[in-house]
Amino acid sequence: MMLSVRSATLPLAVLATVLLTAVPATAQPAPTPQHVRGPDTARIEVKLLAHVNVVRRQSGCRRLKARAGLHGSATAHSSAMAAQGSLSHQLPGEADLRDRLAAAGYRDAALMGEVIAVGPMSPREALNRWLESPPHRALLLDCRMRLVGLGVQAVGDQLWWTIDLVRRH
Image 1: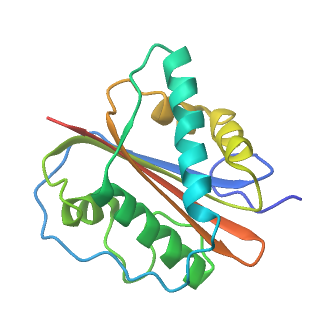
Image 2: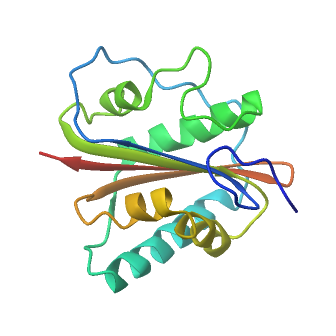
């Protein structure tokens, strides 16, 4: 199934953002999830993190450590995208990535980034699509990144995916 693509010529909509420095910002609360998480989303998130960490290890990077605050931020962003039906790093009325991560407790981040996608696919398929795109691959395999939050939102047959990555000072 071909889906619209926002940043690369892939048969899946994916986007990546990297912020290299954190600037103190006023914390804004993450949006409240609008949809009930499907019964498989927690399992999907665990599998996706396992796949990401295998690829990182093969590339000589440390594994990413999951953090609850980042998970909450990623999940809220996936829910907001699903509610608005829009794939974007910043939805209308939503804080930008830096502010969302600051609100999640990562005001001191030295490096941060986010990858997002939408589509009906497995965790392995989602990761493979990101790895096929140079900006997404570079972000996921950036050995400086240490902490992660994954949020998957199921709405019908669509899955809305967000991975937030952070490196503290």
